[in-house]
Amino acid sequence: MPRAQRKPTPSKGKSDSPQGLLSLRAYARSRKERGLDGGTLAAVQKAIEAGRIETVDDGGRWPKIDPAVADAAWRGNTAERRDQVNVVTDEDDGSTSSPSGTVAGERKRTEAVKRELLELELEQKKGELVNAADVKREAFSRGRELRDRILNVPARVAAQLAATTDPREVEAQLDVELRTALQELVADG
Figure 1: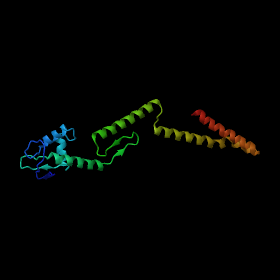
Figure 2: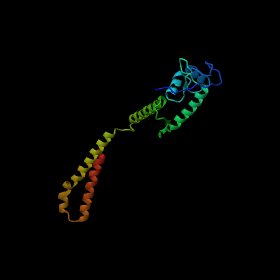
Figure 3: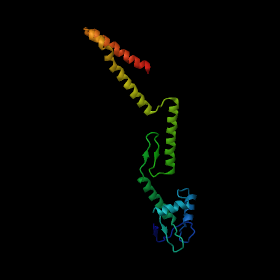
Figure 4: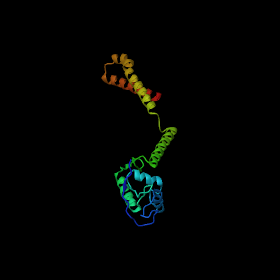
């Protein structure tokens, strides 16, 4: 990627070149001394590669930086990038993270997942959390048992009901048999 360069312009201030220009290292050191972000050579190089700041070719061996111009460009271009980044809110804990995948954001997400897993493990050990497959299997088994007990009622009472002509007595016998089947299911479970 070609570096963005411009013609040198004189600037005021202390520098290691007669035109007020600084080397990349000197510019990084000056940012660090002033308490600004980008106080390392790597950060300055990254800003140049990203096109946030420009270097100046003064005819020497290494590119130089005009600190006043670079500082203004750094502020403006970094603010533009921050405005363009969408902030995602985690609804569970209200934290925010950048989709750019910063190490701090990834660490925060990893810690949240670990915390959730530990909470689930604790609930399982307390008996407050059970395996969903086991619950489905047990519910299916209990439903089948209920169905079988109710469907067996006619076979058990058919002979008694055949001899009975009073509808109230038929209803009473059916009621007793159905309640017995349901109570046996509850007692077995």
